[in-house]
Amino acid sequence: MTIDTNILVYIYDGQDPVRQVSAVAIFDRLMSVRAAVSRQVIGELHNVLQRKLRRPAWEAAQAARSVLTAFETNFPASARAVEDALAFASAGRLSYWDALLVASARDAGCSTLFTEDMHPGHLLSVEVVKPFDTQGRFSDRARELLNL
Image (cartoon, rainbow, N blue to C red; front, side, top):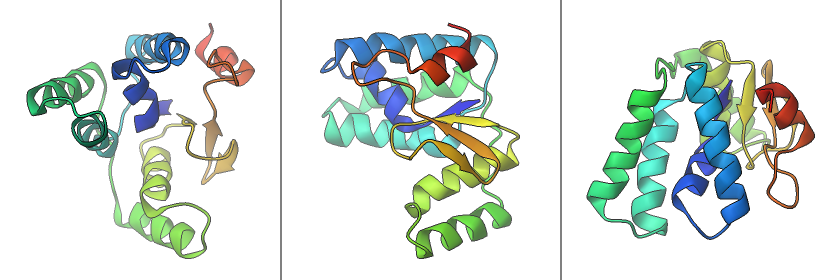
């Protein structure tokens, strides 16, 4: 299992308290099983916190470091992952960065990706799961996979 940047951003963004609580629970659950998180996601988290949420650079860096130390980060961006990402992006199926995340998750052995940015289903042998329902609570599939 792994997560996309948007799940981590909810932890630091208080605009949606229900999703924030759910995101913290996902983080804690994945941390307890030493799940993998892409270094790409860590960099994106830093960028979003600093640029979109206007957090000080030191705070964005500390948040990124917290993720870096909490999770396994051996997430390769192999040549195969890049080729697959380019194919998906050129076909208009995903953005390059989303496709690279999915392909890298596959290469790292992750079977599930929690994200709000992609449609649920299977891509490149990775199940894409929407973590939240319309109220910001856990989706049924997320609850099942996380044993919540």
